[in-house]
Picture 1 (cartoon, helix red, strand yellow):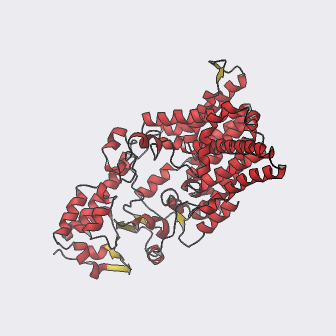
Picture 2 (tube, rainbow, N blue to C red):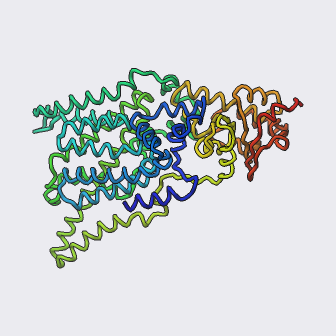
Picture 3 (cartoon, rainbow, N blue to C red):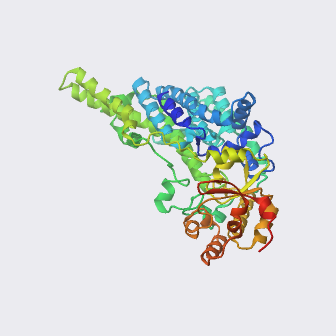
Length: 538
């Protein structure tokens, strides 16, 4: 609750404060408040098509009773963190029935969740850890129908979890005894798998039988030759090599591991043979095996995602959340077991209160860890400063289309509620039909914005139905264009544009800015497209 309140202080810090990923996954939901917004908008239609059913239903229901999607995205994260904490605490008690271990595990898990962007985004990823923990808790109790219900919810909110959960049910059938691997004998394990698999098939079937209107998912072969997936690209999947490729980023096992104490979880397999010296480890229950089963299921899905790249999306989606859960619980077991053993040793030389103080000091130091960080809530909340620009655009007709190569285009749909032709934030290259259109739009804008030929500029305006053109201080600066990682993806167009500007030729758009500018604030200007169309060629 404390971390949630600190998050709310950041989330409600300003009128235009919003989490970074909301600009993709939530901006289009403003259609539910005003159906006239984003008409025939390729970007809004695309991201709306990606939203899982349950996630979309939750936000739509809230909008129907007057709760703005942006407000809900800020209210949800602390609530979801409490749900995760409750399930995590009681699941840990199922593994090792000691409240101090369960407390430390959920403490570390909360720190892990709030030191990365996913929970605070209010997007489908926010639901991943709470749902996975709910599944593990009910599975530890072998509760068939709650497990089935959670699998359905996973498919409706974060479908990647369905594969992990069903794979965990499969691995549970394996038993290792007396040096041999066998199958479970209890019929309940098979019934759990049968019903869980049926629920998984039911909820994932729509993804299998219905083709995306935005074309097939890009193949690994195509992605490897695209700058968008390389170093400096919009989705730098292939930017790492060797061990880094397998350990970090979207391709690796661990997107982010925090806090530092969570790394002690890797010591647990080394300490298990020392159970006699660490008495707390002797108190683990059969549910302890669920951590290993979850790890095996997540690794299996991770490698399957690599084999089928990118049909199962990014491989790290199958290990990131599992790793946070497994390591937070393993770290709590390791830390408290070692602290307990150290306390027993201290008690043999000093009075009992000294030993208790030592153990309490370990727990308190873990609680105070965030105060040692320069930035604890690393949730990537934005605080745009162009409020006057958004207010001006919001007064324009609702079918206004804004063309721009500026980074500010990332915020227009979200805060001004007007469509943009392209933006860096929305240039996602996973579906070929969608991205082919986005790529062509960017190339056309690069040539039109820098060309001295007014006729070329006017043709692009008519082709796309552009109403206003937004430019900033870097719009005609060849040095800025050369340094822009995003624009450098669009070769040879960007090289041609830089060459044109270096030759000293005046772009038609720049020449007409004094005549056709509608709005100016700082180095940002809005140029009226109708005015540009009415100018004679020169």
